[in-house]
Amino acid sequence: MNATSARALAFLLLWLAVAGRNPSDLPVGVVVAAAAAWASVRLAPPAGGRPKLRAALVFLRDFLRLSLHSGLDVARRAFRANLDLGPGVIEARLALPPGFARNAFCMIASLLPGTLLTGSDPVDPRKVFVHGLDLSQPIAADLADEESLFMRMIDHE
Image 1 (tube, rainbow, N blue to C red):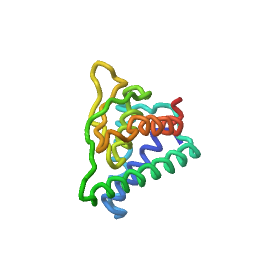
Image 2 (tube, one colour):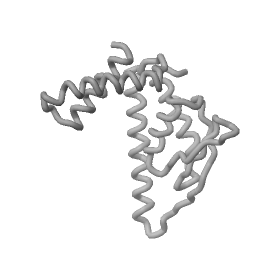
Image 3 (cartoon, rainbow, N blue to C red):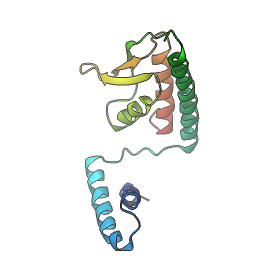
Image 4 (cartoon, helix red, strand yellow):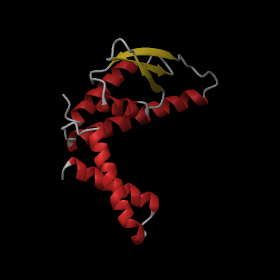
């Protein structure tokens, strides 16, 4: 299955999820899905790499572990009388070059409790700014570990 077909199928499934499965709407959904797939391939050409299933499972396992650990840490701090926070912004360096893969990673990394990627340096495209609830935590190291697993998952090493 090529990229256009895969995207058309994804758009058609999205159409069915939103519009419902009324058979009379299906021809319109097919046309819209085909047009959306064509436009998406023109505007965002496929990168060429294919996700690796084993690496994706490792990434998911590690992401869930880190998410659970971070979430429990945030909850522990929230329920204490003394919030025990040391918020601030740190600089971290990413190995991924600016583009779709890096944007996807930044979006996923921002889901981790206690951290939020807030932007990048316009002069140094590898530098990002991360807001953390406690700067004594290894935020940059955790981010680098997650990025490494993400790069392995998308076959971008």
